[in-house]
Length: 190
Image 1 (spheres, one colour):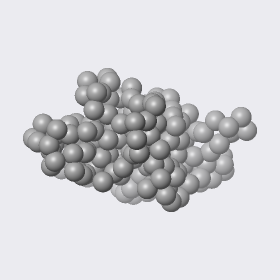
Image 2 (cartoon, helix red, strand yellow):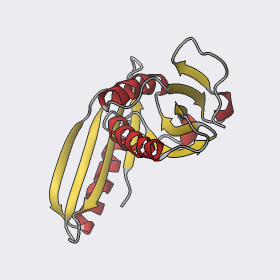
Image 3 (cartoon, helix red, strand yellow):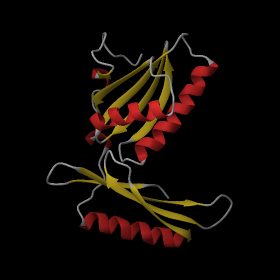
Image 4 (cartoon, one colour):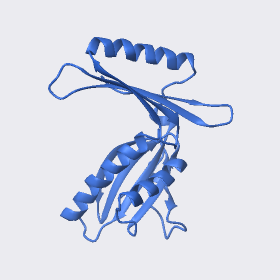
């Protein structure tokens, strides 16, 4: 079963999120049903139902979807979000074993940090010439930039080679550098 993620913007402009998913315990038929909710950009609250069957999880997810709809929470499309690009400058053209470790570590740290705050999902990572790129899809790209800096600092990942840029979903090639400022040239993923 996949994750159901919904959002609602309050009258004051605050973006709230609710999400639910079911995961089974390794090697078992039972699992846990999780509901995670909060204000985008802040650590969320989580409620868990343990020892849940697939059938029960399906009915819980249906009830969750119905309640979200009643409360005005809806799924948003990729096109309604924006890109945030995290980029590390590399010392070699293709990257070293240390850079591959950085790729894995940064991706894992960002995935959890952003998810628990409703700030988006890590969509992909890749190496370009002398660059490591991490692509994030976010409903609040500007808030995500601050959270990314906090996450990478807390994870003690190299901050001296870091650049972050944002772009509209439909035009990733028009990315504008958001960190560090002022930008020292154009931002490019290639």
